[in-house]
Amino acid sequence: MSRWLGVGAFLVVAGVLIFAGVAVRPFGVPPRTEMDAYFNRFSQPEVAANNAVTAIVFDYRGYDTLGEATVLFTAVTGVALILRRRGK
Amino acid sequence: MIGNLPFVVCMILVALGLWTLVAKRNLVKLVIGIGLIESGVNLFLVALGYVHQGIPPIYTYAPKDAPMVLPTPQALTLTSIVIGLATTALMLAFAVVIYRHKGTLDARKIRDLRG
Amino acid sequence: MTVVVRTIARVLLPISLEFGGYVIMHGHLTPGGGFQGGAVAASGLAMVVVAFGAKRLSGKKGLLSALESLGGVAFTALAFLGLGLTFFANVLAGAGGLFGNPVPYGVNPGDLNTAGTLPLMNWAVGFKVLAGLGAVVLLFALFGGEHDR
Image 1 (tube, rainbow over the protein chains, first blue to last red):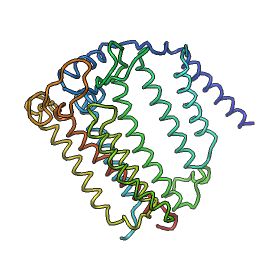
Image 2 (image 1 turned 120 degrees about the vertical axis):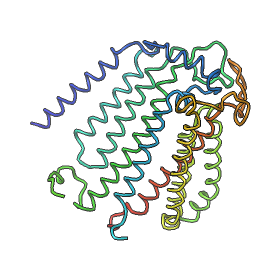
Image 3 (image 1 turned 90 degrees about the vertical axis):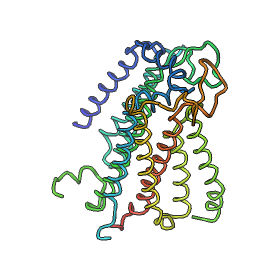
């Protein structure tokens, strides 16, 4: 009984998700493009990079990349700490 | 025209991950479900930045006068992918430790809070 | 593993490392970058772990950890280069020196000697990701077994 209740609840949530995917907004028409148009226009004169994504990752939003590197380092440290052999 | 099919596919991925989290008991399968939800959200973020008839935002040998897709969602999705990988590695390490301590991976049998 | 798998791994390891290096080096011109190239090279490392066993590589943990720390320190140091303007300012771009050629606006064939600190940061992050993923795979292969408590 409770299993079918769970299945029904999941179906309701999945239906809401798929309805949200249909109704969110038309595909291929972003709402705001001013900032990205700036990045596409000025990544070559300001950063001298042809690849605007790399220009954003390492220059305009370098702080995000720094935090990401910190997260990666913390994860590797955590895995080494959890999985090491005891007493050696 | 494909309409909103990419968004719907992302939502189907998220729903499959939610079903895995609800229905499965194995800890490794739960990690796989969380990975499915991550993939759906990353695909959704990239799909939000698509411009109709767009090309990648790279000027090397690009076609002339074509609109470029938004680069910021792609850059931040890159961050999200690496963070998802880090959390997946940590979750798998915890699953290994739980299996060593309890001798099982069944999520129903490891409900006690005692270490 | 069997001798077939080991032979194929010997052939494929330099190719995967070189392709990872190519993706890192051309990160500012073509799709890719430090993270993607590091992941490609780390997949070659994972193939070595699968083919030859983790025991043969257990002495390399110190090397991997040193490489990861070196990548992080190099990334932060390159960010500190621009401290006269702001943190993460790209002081080398267009300056004429290392990676300092100017780039004309619009579609161009691409010049490797551009983009200032971006290729250097790509190398730092690439080594960091390579060492991090390789260390995770190696740790799981070494200590992830059932009886290794």
